[in-house]
Amino acid sequence: MEQASPGPYPAQPAAGDDIGRDIYALAEKIFPISRSITGDGVRKTLDILAEHIELERHEVPSGAQVFDWTVPREWNIRAASIRDMQGRTIVDFADSNLHVLNYSVPFKGVLPLSELRKHIHTLPEQPQAIPYRTSYYAEDWGFCMAHERLEEMPDAEYSVEIDSELKQGSLTYGECLLPGETDREVLLSAHICHPSMANDNCSGLAMLAFLAAGLKKRPRRYSYRFLFAPGTIGALAWLARNEQRLGQIDHGLALSCVGDGGGPTYKRSRRGDAFIDRAMALVVGRRGDGAKLLDFSPYGYDERQFCSPGFNLPVGLFQRSAFATFPEYHSSADDLSFIRPEHLAASYRMIMEAIEIIEGDWTPINLCPKGEPQLGRRGLYSARGGNRSTASSTMAMLWVLNLADGDHSLLAMAERSGLPFGELAGAAALLREHGLLADAPARRP
Ligand code: ZN
Image (tube, rainbow, N blue to C red; front, side, top):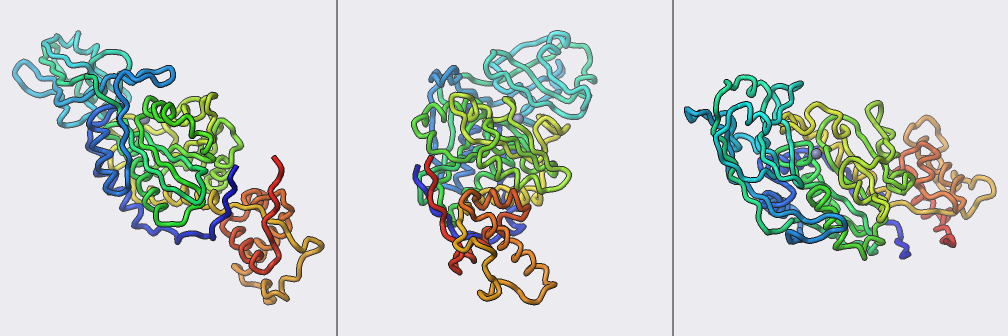
């Protein structure tokens, strides 16, 4: 395995509050687009993301076999509505793309309410919200609407039309690679298949684009791969096309629901003790009461595919509120008022913090291990006590010196000392400058 030397720490200044506004503005721009696992909505979204980053676009033809799955026909939709026999509109796709069961086959007809009801999905417990429902792999048509609107519909006949199309086309995904000093990779992914929902996952898509834009400007020890793929089938298509390269992935994160004020939540990779699991535990675990660290489970987003036993990649899931735990989830209530620039900015910083750990980790060895080296003589120890920041930087130096036995990387030191990784990395850099630390010799595997 190619060994990369750690970069300077910190490699970039902390992002200001503008980053939250920028991410929000991009999420807002892609929000209205009608997306699905295939079709022009994904392409339009990638076009907008490509205004911020260099995106390579891939098309996988309908019918292509990806492991146990087949890429379905391409779905596009122009219009859909339910009207009463007087021509008054009850439901119109033009008002909300959630109104149509995603992947509905085309349909046109006149039905009594009793028949139509079998094709209508509502949320009785949230009577004002439109649910988000899909039927990708079973041919069906349907509408989604506010339960209270359904309750108002008189028992009569209705004229129904879904002007959609399923054709031999392709599935689209986008990819951006930022090469680093080594070809060891960090994989960051977000699903691009949901229609107008802000947190799940316009927030994740916009976040991913700004992470790529931010990382492009800095020196990188690792190469970074950003994947914008439709959920499940898109991730599988990418895995199938990149199987030979998967061994290069050292760390990964799936991102979704990163714009609300909950959590933060980190779900560990299937490995449970991967470097990313430990780094995210540091970042998330010290974020107070709302913070949640969850063990891997085979349900959620595309970490399910990345962590399937045939791949078992070190990929975890980062979210603010965990999916399916907030009432807005998978409904029209997950709108642009549900996400906030300040939450997006906080999520951005947390992910960047994990990246700083990935980039900045190294294993030092103490060159003066018998007793404490005399720091004062080297100007590293403040003789006058009482200055808090001096005290904490001294503590960081003492921890680094003590744990620099070749068995502890900086991440392990942060775990054991409870000190922020950044402080320990800064202390280690200073001690190395003063000749007290060196790179530990590489261990034999
Ligand atoms: Zn979802």
